[in-house]
Length: 81
Image 1 (cartoon, rainbow, N blue to C red):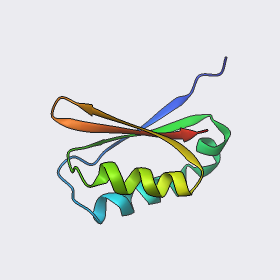
Image 2: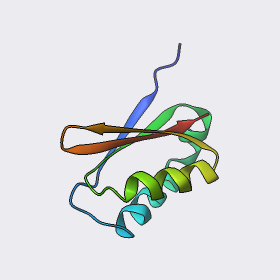
Image 3: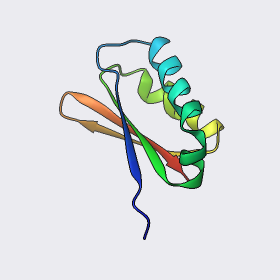
């Protein structure tokens, strides 16, 4: 079993479209590792709109996305299908 590296991105306090742009930049930076399943991008956000815009964009790019509503923030995990 291969250990999956978690790339954490804290965008608490930011609002769209800045949130989406920051996440897209990180997805492109780590594209090879995300696509190969070596890594997952774990985003921490408190801006509710990002729970729609980020997953929608990531899914269109072929990624699997999980959104969790945690206490005080959302966690969006992006990785390989």
